[in-house]
Image 1 (cartoon, helix red, strand yellow):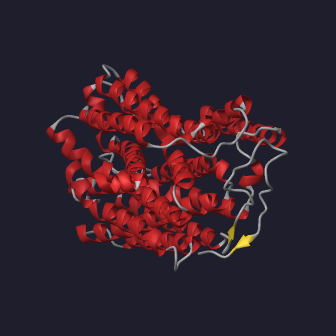
Image 2 (image 1 turned 90 degrees about the horizontal axis):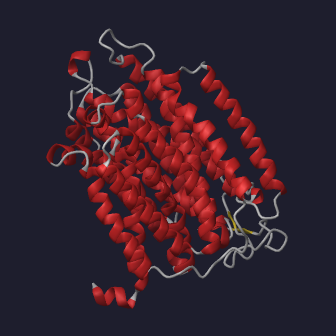
Image 3 (image 1 turned 135 degrees about the vertical axis):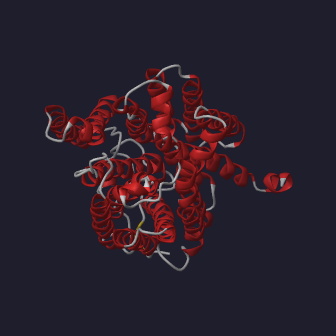
Length: 486
């Protein structure tokens, strides 16, 4: 193994990137099943403990594109080390947090690690031979998808045997070692984008993301028609408009709007929005469904551990599909894989709508969701990487991940509203609520599949993408020739 790594140092680079991305993805889902345990241990309310998720979501949504851009400018390797170090520090703070306030702060710090996704894709594009970029991006995407599923599976056993604080101790050790390995073994970026950080655009971007995601995440608790929700949504619209104007006029934009208008980029981002809405809703509510006690007239009364085991087919499907995606690239375009992944999601949601009475039905539907997520994650990342200049890989893939997160927040909020609209006397959702929720996800998944068909069949290659654009006015045009999809 050592001799192999010496002959091909890129393999070690890939292992470091995979570890960082995989553990960040796992931390996204590892906490969700154990929120009641955290609530009880830290003596807080249900409304307050949800900030453990909300703070992480808001932090990651801000830092992912911003640090992706900084990595494009100052160097992806050093920015990756900073992101991993912040993630490890956040895990340490969470592991020793004496109260809910400190735990929420720790989750904000962990959110900085969201930049590992775009930085990893950028490093792969910079360091790997062109023939291996597609398969490497697909493999990282598979690990990201599987990491999210693995969190749901591992949460129960870890809490049952060691306690919930080990959900942070274990990642802290692994991520800390990964940060050291990244500093030691990942080569510094050969591709840089000259410029500086546009702090006004950064503040506007942060402002509209927080103003949008906060009411979407807390709308059910605050009331969708409350003044806080409507006021923040209006503020989000105003700040978004201001951000778009600022970026369009800037000589040094944080995110180049011309890049975002490329047909392959905006259509892929649209799919990411819709796909995120259906995917995160399944993550959130399928484990909840199987944990519903049988006294409710449905559900399986599963424990956290049992619910995680029922999600194993989803995890396996994600990993297998993601790994296969890169090898299929020679025969099936990224667009075809994206559309196929969306169709798998449609089939899974439709199946859950009409058939959710036995464990094998949940397992089959979960497996279909996993296959869809594995293909979709890999193909979306490859579509973005293939269609933007090399110097904007980090920020472009960061925005794609961000848009998927926004979709996930919206999808989870809407699904929650539908599922819990008419609870039983016991307070548990009615089966009809879940049925309507799964039907809603079927419609969203179908919309994602139709949007995938709108992605250009060819690959729009930007001239000069291997060197990256310089400051606006000197970079190559983003309207290159159309290259047949592989």
